[in-house]
Image 1 (cartoon, rainbow, N blue to C red):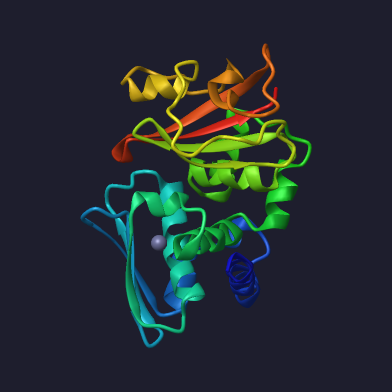
Image 2: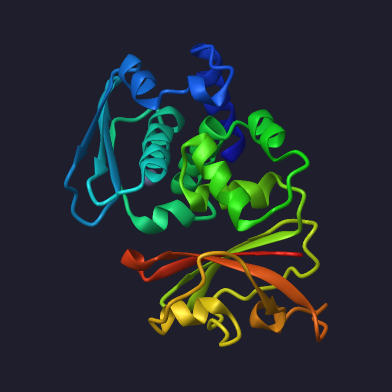
Length: 252
Ligand SMILES: [Zn+2]
């Protein structure tokens, strides 16, 4: 239950009297909760947690090179511990765990997002700022989290009309569209359209690092509200190790 996952994260912030993002040291909190944290080589997963009777170990894969992503993965693994405290278990988390839209993996992400980007801190940080590629990287840097988790948090809490789409092997796997965005229908299983820069990623071409304008039909041709000559901004966060890409769209 994501409501409980959120509450678990808030409880932890409260327990350690964390009032600002720069006071949050996840390794220290994990250690204080009898969770050892290691960075080691892992096969086929980015993170793992094993625990028994309130003691446990979290392992983060050495393949993660980004400090923000490492921090988010640590928070995700802690999420399994605090959300699923009633059982002794070992969980291996793969790349797709980060983008599930229900279940235990989703709840671990909800916990992680709330812990690292606690809603009032996040609202305060984005207040009066316009969504841009720069803002997404600033969020990731300020909260010490991954760019993809920053983008997803923005789609959840931001007030710019935003859509987030995850594709794998050139196929839409998942989308999250906020209520302000004028189009709402993207079919899971839809092939990435050639009008998007995302399609260039799957063709192995260079793609822009910042947002670019694209015609709306690149993503919403099947939407009931689709109109010609509409444009949105598109930014892609490629995840080549999973042959996946996270695409963020927003209204200019
Ligand atoms: Zn997980």
